[in-house]
Length: 110
Image 1 (spheres, rainbow, N blue to C red):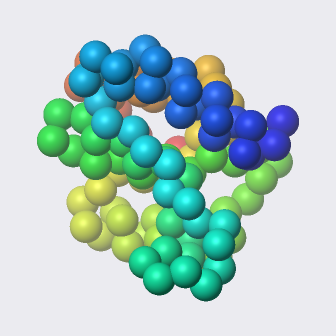
Image 2 (cartoon, one colour):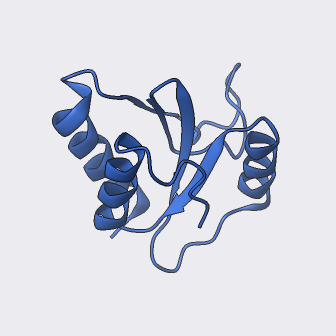
């Protein structure tokens, strides 16, 4: 499965299950455009706000690896007290979101 497909599945599931009811706010971060004002190289694929906390989600295939820019973004996000995770499947994403909503895995870092 391609990362773009995984991102679409994760976003749609979270939005349909919880976003519509206002339990979370989720949005994609467009980071494929290289030269566009306001875009940050290495930014995570998704941002989820739950209960006043922000969570960055980087989506990768089973064999995908973070780029240098993505690792740097992860370090900066964590330094700001943000949660940052690398997710590799829809089922892993579902578990992560359900745990966030139940107050578990606040600093779930894989």
